[in-house]
Amino acid sequence: MKRILFCIVLCFVYLSAYATGQESDVIYYRGQQWWLLARPADADSSLSAALYKNLPADRCQSTANWGGYVGYWSVRGGILVLDSIMVGLVKDGECVDTTLPDSFIQQVFKAYEDKGVVMARWYSGTLRLARGKMIRYAHEGWNRNYENEMELTVHSGGIVDSVEYHNRIVCEGFDLEGHSMQNLKDWDTLQLGFLPIAKQYPQLNGKERIRFMVSDFSVDTLGNLTDIAKVVCHAQLDEKLEQQLALEFKRYLMSIHPWKVYYINGQYCVTQLLWCFPVRLIPKS
Image 1 (cartoon, helix red, strand yellow):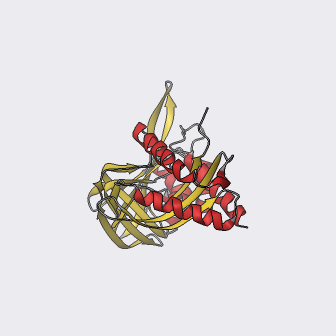
Image 2 (cartoon, rainbow, N blue to C red; image 1 turned 90 degrees about the horizontal axis):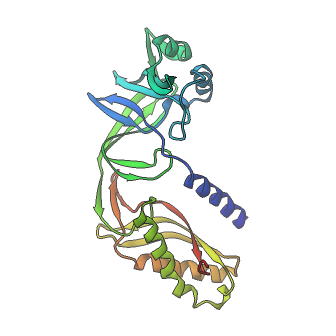
Image 3 (cartoon, rainbow, N blue to C red; image 1 turned 30 degrees about the vertical axis):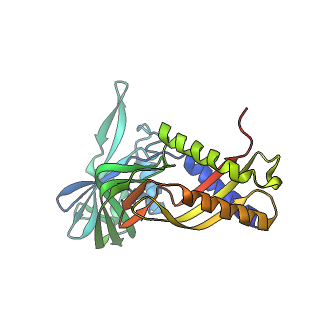
């Protein structure tokens, strides 16, 4: 069971590694325009099916916008409202942004339309709004952060709470998130630095690589990892040996200084909440 769960988690990590950052919807709230890091129209399966059935089949789609549309929203009288939908249509060989007619929205969302206004009564959950400079980016969905963010708690389309955050980079340092040359260099540095520790264990002789699942980091404002709640080693070895290797890897990670630290939505954190880290034990030829 332990290995099955590891394979499932590994599959999710693998898929997310190849996911793409998604284009945001747009929302007007308190007199300001924000990026809406969500697709509220996709939250209800039957409503979403009707939407995609009626969207122009020849609309422009891409890996950054699988649905091929952008929703424009606002909050009126404390209610989340869908104002319009924009798609890209090919004209003269180019993709041209085109706002669909009001009749389209009123037809698809007729169950939620009242006097020409579509109120998002189908939606309950938390919406994340963003403005300003992007300070963190991961190539996956809306997994990114901006200087100014706001979380709206929504119940049946009504805004019941809102919390605003001011995010920033607290400390520059070791960073494993991203695909820049520096990120790749940090990955290589981390891997090479663990090899002398791994060589102390003859049981690893002949193994090409081992993997660690690492999650739940605590960090201070100076870039020190103060704790790592969970480190699991997967090397097809004796369980006690895997536990010892996990402890060694935890100590090693905590010895690195400084890490890049963010203050994001009220918390100090490093880039990722979960790492699946393969350590190559035999250098590439």
